[in-house]
Amino acid sequence: MQFKDIKGQYIIANSLTKIIDSGRISHAQLFLGDTVSGSLALAIAYAQYLNCTNRQHYGDGNDGSLRADSCGECPNCKKYQQLLHSDLHLYFPTTTTSSVKSSPSSAEFQSEFREFLDHFNQRGSLDDWYEFMGVESKQGMIRERDADDLVKTLALKAYEGSYKVVIVWMADKMNGVMANKILKNLEEPLPGTLILMVAESRDRMLSTILSRTQLCRIPRSDGDGVLWAGEMALRKEWEQEFAQLYVTWMRQLFKLNMASLSAWVDDLASKGREQQKAFLLYAQEATRECFLRNNAGLPPALDFGDEKFNMSFHKMITIHNVERLNNAFNETIRAIERNAHAKIALMELSFSISRALKKNAG
Image 1 (tube, rainbow, N blue to C red):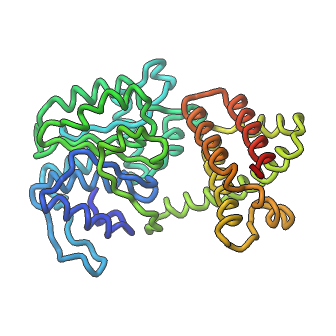
Image 2: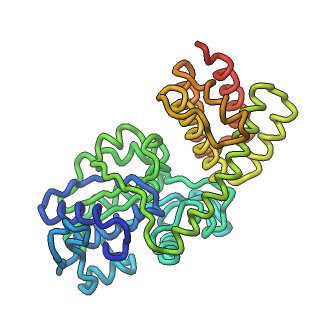
Image 3: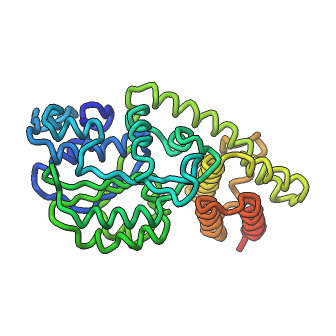
């Protein structure tokens, strides 16, 4: 992957090439942003540029153009472009499949993952990866076997390039054991080692990992591809459905009609875990928006439901309950990521929100 192929992210690309050219390379970095926006593609292009033996420089990049890039022709670049360089090591969420019945790890899915990255031009989402694996209803994790393999990998010196590079995609999907096992390597890696973590959620990463990595925020980009347009269309379709779900849910939590609430929970629990998470993230953001409307002097109208709901519901989210609501969403999202029973987790969340809303006055 070359920076020139990641449209809409030349400002970030220029910052990354300046870091390498200056020799001030942090051994552990976190690329935080949507994969669709190019966070993983940027990490791979960064690693390729680092190991390129004939880097190309075009100018200062102050006009928004690309200042530098890998050559794309040297032996290292050619192997990186096929994701087959011996010093490039990829780790990512996995789960059991029809061919891997137990203890899945990244090592067993390397070929499939390279095919996935090629198919989506390194901008596929986590949902896309699960669908590519044929496990849409399951939740992947980065587990202990990956940690053991990563630790062994980091103990070796670079073989072909100047740097050995480890890329952990969706690093917020590391379980606790995996994260704790690699802490020492984040602190004291061998010279010529680069650990790049790519994640979409900073909140769901351990503070011990965050404190040991240099943060690089990847902004949203409209790019220029069909993939982005398709992703945005899907998100818009989901958000229309999510808005109706959210309004129905909030109204049920006031009435607390158990029959209708149970039916609502059953419906959401029947969807894939990634869609459940996507809805909860939407609902969390919608609740935050209500708080801002209520406390920041913004116009009162929302656009989640009908006029009556939009004009009145935001008043229920106050300084007295917003933190409690936010924590409840985060806990449920983490529970679903860990394969908790969806119906139980969603019902517990519903009760927590209902109690918080009814005590909004303090």
